[in-house]
Amino acid sequence: MKTIEQLVTEAKTLVQKHHDGTLTLAEAERMNAVSAELKTARDAKAAAGPTAEEREEGERLLRALSVPGRKSDDGEDRRLTRAVFKSAARDLARKAKGSADAFQAKALTVGQYDAPLTLAAPASLGEAPAGLLEQVPTYVFGDRYYSFLKQTTRDLNAAVVAPGALKPTSTIGLSQVRDELAVVAHVSEPVDEYLLADVPSVAEVVGNELLYGLHSELERQFLHGTGSANGELNGILNQSGVQVINTGARPIDRLRSALTALEVQGYRAGVIALHPLDWEKVETATASGSGELLLPYGPTATVDPITRRLWGARVATSTAVNVGEAIVIDPLTVGLATDGNISLNIGQPGDTFNRNQVVFRNEGRFGVMLKQAAGVVRVTLEGAA
Image (cartoon, rainbow, N blue to C red):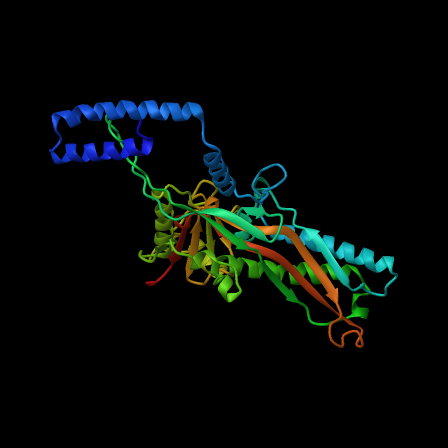
């Protein structure tokens, strides 16, 4: 008895002969027999269920598709917001203060302090987004390694099929990406211990400066990182397959074309990332002559300045976006990987001990996930790319 693969090969040969007009009467009868044998073989395979090898491969793909990192305790998407960083800063400052109190230190005890990044739910983000990362799903992995499935090809050929004819094949190429989280970090200048005697100032140092700086660099790396070979994250704009829009009379025309480019591919424009200077230009653009606003305002109009939406898509302003560019994204096609922790080290390197000084080091581990490159559009707002 022929295998399913052998029957499929024979069927393809017979169908080709039919298209070429060289099919004999005996071969035409064989077509019907092959169709029946295929159905019987497939029914038998379905009844028997997958083999252990097939089951293992299927489970491996499912684990990769669902991203084996922990989204959250309740399975919902979570985002890395600036409020999350501020909360972590307060947690780190509280731990440092507790350590200092325990040792009755005059300022801070040298040591390392960790805080979990308690991610925010999208449902709680009703206000205007404070940055791009607030619109990107964040996945938490248990160690420094992370993996996900990346779509490499996409050729969908669904069609009406006559009874007994072979069904068309769609190519959905997937490859599993395995990578390692990279450390994003920076240190402070030496700070005099006596200036830290007023412990509440620690929260200001950590929350308003170090963690804000880390968040800003993380946004830049997410977009423009040049890859692990250069010691950086693998930014989405430096990966192949990202769509490009560089034609259109006005910036707003090009932005609208980017939304269409995503919709044509079956994606949804969930976020438009702009530099604050470009968002101001788009929001206040006026028609020549009349001076009227090109884009009407209001909750149901093209521009909603309160929740910061443009054609229904969220607008995230970020200085990580180049002036003169915009990035339009379907958030479901990208992701940010992390181990879910951020740390603050307080040390006395070099001769800082003799100088009564301490140095702060702030860091976290992160990675970039581009699951479907066509879900990202890079827009040149003026001129040609």
